[in-house]
Amino acid sequence: MMKFAWDNYKRYAWGQNELRPLTRNGHIGNMFGGLRGASIVDSLDTLYIMGLMEEYEEAKEWVQNNLNLISNGEASLFEVNIRYVGGLLSAYYLTGAEIFKQKVVELGEKLLPAFNTPTGIPRGVINLGSSGTSWSWGWASAGSSILAEFGTLHLEFLHLSQLSGNPLFTEKVMNIRKLLNKIEKPHGLYPNFLSPVSGNWVQHHVSIGGLGDSFYEYLIKSYLMSDKTDQEAKKMYYSAMEAIETNLVQKSPGGLTYVAEWRGDGHLACFSGGMIGIGADDGPAEQKQHYLDLAAEITHTCHESYSRSATKLGPEAFRFDAGAEATATRLSDRYYILRPEVIESYMYMWRLTHDPKYRQWGWEAVEALEKHCRVDAGFSGIRDVYASTVSHDNMQQSFFLSETLKYLYLLFSDDDLLPLEDWVFNTEAHPLPVIRKTCLQEHGAKQDHGQTDLE
Image (cartoon, rainbow, N blue to C red; front, top):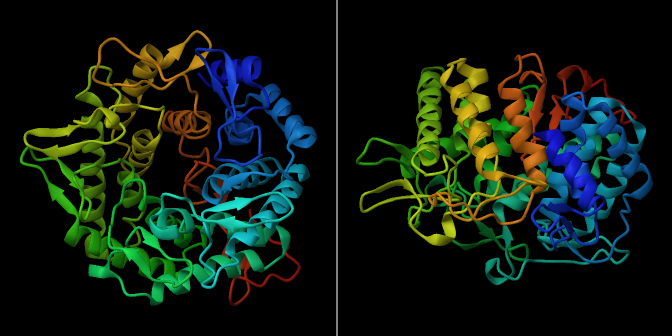
């Protein structure tokens, strides 16, 4: 599947951000400013891990000769960080090729102006041209920054400091954490929107699907990536989990466990199963089994959202209301854009429990992808998972190559391929090595010469 997706991207969209498989051309989009080759950078580690060496070499050569980082145009700080910074970091750590290190440090430096705000909370958009101005997305209420975006920089920025020896990257994300720690949290929960000017919440809307989710994911992953030394991240994660359980975890009349939104309309996304699973081990001892059970229940709900559709692929979001359980009611929620979140949870739950049902569920997804999303020139998302006649959206998302296929491959591989005790996946499924205690001095941010023994 990876080779098919890659070959078609290469044939019809090489150097552009994503393949449009029905029209057999490329898509640039506006998320990455002037950056190009998103599918290439997102695929480097997947190609390498799968042993597709010829393809990996072509990708590496493109990065070396064609990845131009000086580009005017508004880019999403979040998307550039998780896809480009994450992809280049992983490629470097897996292969040791210097070009990836050189490019990622150069790109990281271009992201720093986004933090030039009164609070140091970065704005959502950065211009990668020479000016480096930044401003917030129009739709984030009243010029606010989005929790999942500024809260999903931590893993990558710590590694940027590791590689460059420049403590500035770590300082920027530690400053965000300091502010989040200090600020008052309604019911122990973190709302979605924060003003980068005043440092206050803009409105009290809380969710763990889409706008808030990867923030919580990065708390537990920061703890794990620090070789379990980052006590602050641990404390923030487990208190947040407690608040989420008290306020947001619900059981439907039909017995399905799900995480609701605080003021929500039951509009849910799926990924938290895997997160709660990897966090089960280090919580309070008496809670360990409870968290593992909760992770399994939520993953089961997400599987139900897949198995209750005609295509056996899950909707973008689903609800629990008036008899509809784990199904999308609004048309706008019924699409499937090759997303990885449910498969990601299967992979983690398989690694944590080795219950064969997770591989079985993963295989159901493979069959559904092959049947409904594979077209003549690549893979495409579909517009309505409940319609037996499939309508394609003409987009092969870069995260399909980065995440969906990588997590499927890992689900069916042995546990010693990227073992979870040595690697932490960023939210675009790019593996980053655990930073061992032995390589860090007292405070973790200050390296001797930026040299670390990551293995």
